[in-house]
Image (cartoon, rainbow, N blue to C red; front, side, top):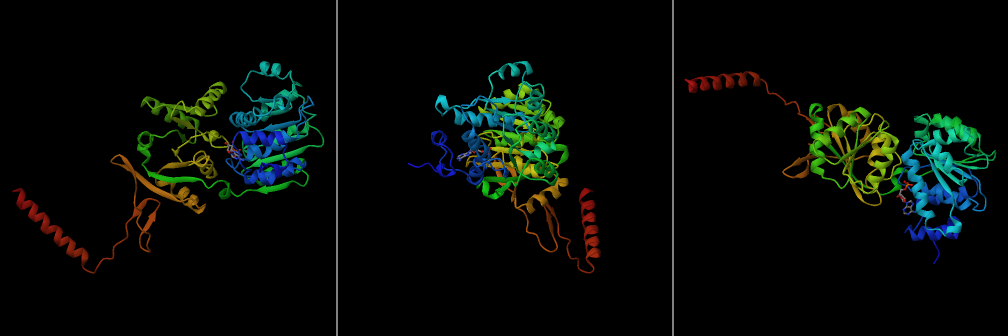
Length: 427
Ligand code: AMP
């Protein structure tokens, strides 16, 4: 039987490997970028994680790497260690299905691993390098890794690379690669600031944009849970307990807040780990391994974990606070509802978040308001908006009543009567 991947012109052993891991047909981004990459075209792939974008570049690269040549032929860069490791794991998924003589030699090169050991490992030359820009650049500069033989470069999550200040490192790697360099840039957004870099290295790139709503018909329920600033931590712990999720990621905006939440949850006996930039690399790696095996129930994280990382079985996202950059709300929510499963993205919501919620509604996110009552989550009814009453995201502002003339006087008289009656009864 013909594989649906055949028309993308990837070779038979890759097709067989894909069918043995149960991939039945290419996703939209794969369909639209793989033929061009195989033809050597520069490519800008604009799509979100979850669209199958990793294989959109991995497959054509694997197709093109010449197994006979013992030299670096392609470099894939990603902004975080976790993401680089994840791309490497996806590579292994396919590679392990291939006959041994067709297996590409690949190395994951990420910061945090011992430099000396890494240099030792590089004595066998990889054909494919997957890693973070800083570490790859260091090794290239130290001439422990030779990349001038490589003519394919992937920059994954390019907008995040730019935000994190890694584009310069990528630039330095690119400048040491082959002159005829094919560059593939994948990014959820293509900000103007990225243009100088793109122009420097790309010749008439093909720009493929897969609209977010096409990615997956994700079944994510967006929930707002009303809270007050002072009760927030207690409310979070209650919420975490009440959801009793298969696995939940709790997002906060700062490392300090992540620590505070994780400490409080641990003190309450919840099964919790944390992930942020100050957690030592080795621990981070270990946590990611344990996450995949669902060895604990809650991960508290900064937005470091919001982008790119594919964690299976995330049933709930809880936003302790809304992210400053609202695009991250979408990235965070995207960690759940993966692989056709349904998911819940719940946000603790206080007065000051009204503006954020409004902005998200403009992005076509539909929220429901819920409360935990008598052992179950129930939707809290939102009163209808009317000309005179204004419902502002869960906060009901009562309609000013029309007051009949003489009403105040009547009320005062009634009050006086009641007071008199009360005094009489007290005697
Ligand atoms: P990504 O957008 O690369 O993070 O991919 C999201 C998930 O989709 C990963 O778990 C992939 O293994 C999976 N995936 C990628 N391509 C396909 C495909 N053609 N069919 C089924 N699953 C896929």
